[in-house]
Length: 65
Image (cartoon, rainbow, N blue to C red; front, side):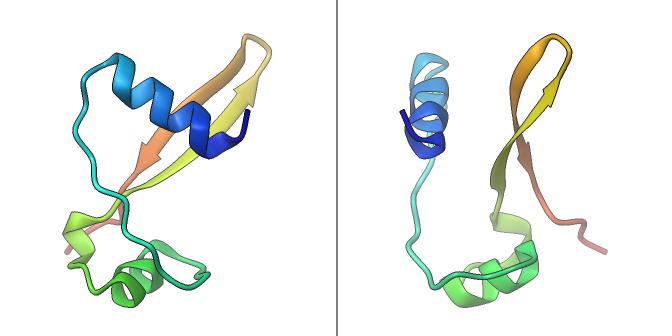
């Protein structure tokens, strides 16, 4: 199972609405927002962090200022 599948399943199990927006490969979240034509405060990136207890999905949003 890919990370994308794991994230989709996690969100579906918790009835969390989301929208996928396809865009070219980018680095920081603000570049992703620009490439996807989405305001900075409307984008989030899912990552997985790992510690001694296992994996944990985390969704991050860029700071707005």
